[in-house]
Length: 115
Image (cartoon, rainbow, N blue to C red; front, side):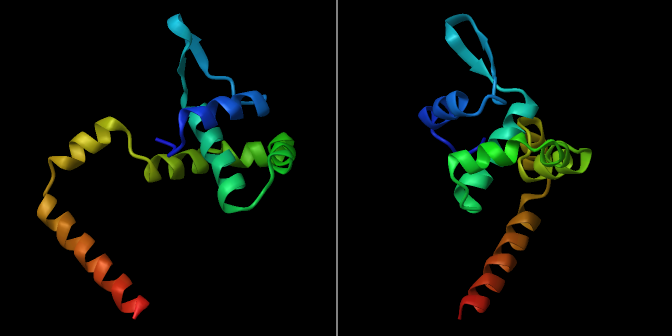
């Protein structure tokens, strides 16, 4: 869901004290919605905004930043970017030919831009 390898998540759990997934029998980790949002925000800070781990820790310790990140609008935006399994199943039953046509049109626009 977050496009990360398990060893990266384990390392981040050690480094970022805010990231505490629920563990159950067999030491299996279960990530709640808030955990996933936090992981995606950490990934964004480290991989796309160029923060170091120490810099990302500092940014995540800022209460205003966390409040903005976990606001209702931010959660809705994150959910729209990352559909849940039920959403994927229901959307696959809709008219897939129109979706395919839309996708082809978007790819065509991208190709024109690149040329």
